[in-house]
Length: 349
Image 1 (cartoon, rainbow, N blue to C red):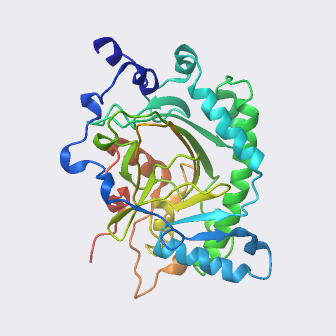
Image 2 (image 1 turned 90 degrees about the vertical axis):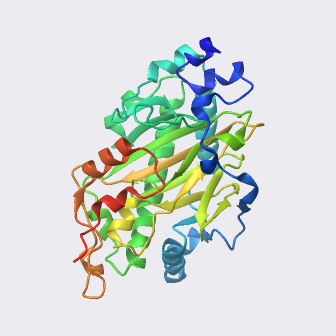
């Protein structure tokens, strides 16, 4: 066991253990309680057909998106315009990456959360007390030409497949941001114009099979620090969303993405749209891969409630802040159930 404990990555530890090591075990009151989880259906997480955005039903589709942002903070999308082969290629390249020999993967390893391309484990191992059952490769991908040279060169197709996927997802995000702006009653380009130079990060999350999934998390309950997240899942369930005080399992639907509102969108919307708490659980039989794209402001962008959403009845809920300030606080405080946004609330008069 001592030798196993020296492994930097969970992927290289799991083959030698038959129980969850102590540093992954959650206190009893803070365990997944998987028996009480509801499985999602269309009524619990909306499924929106994006084809409607480019036809006569645009207003109706925008209304659906607005309702989903306000009531759920999470929705699923179909007919999103990203070809199935592009999606399959990135899932395949992620699987190949995590199956590379340990020495090859570790070329990308870093414990510094500010490094723009890094392989690591858990969440932030410098600050957390309990580890999470995941390894992840996280990297910046916009502007693509500034970051692609940092990405792994193995598997050989990594940069080509991931670059294509990033570009397609960015196009999808910009289309969604227009619709979300309109749904708030703002100019179509309002949100996009208030993100500075824009930023886009991606993660490839790898959750190995876990011998005692009831004791730990892939990721505990948290909100996303960015503006909007586009999540691609493989066919293994694991994502759960907190809705009306209960956890709902969002099981994968082929050829769809999950969209969730991040903390910056909640701030810009002046609390009209909510950044929802979600988590990843693990299982004992199958590995799981999820690939979130985090679209966000650039570090110097000043974020705060849109002026068009502030009036006498709806005063500004948050002070203005730079995204850089937010990002550093988010990573340093670790994953907590309460939203990091609370730190930026305006003092009550």
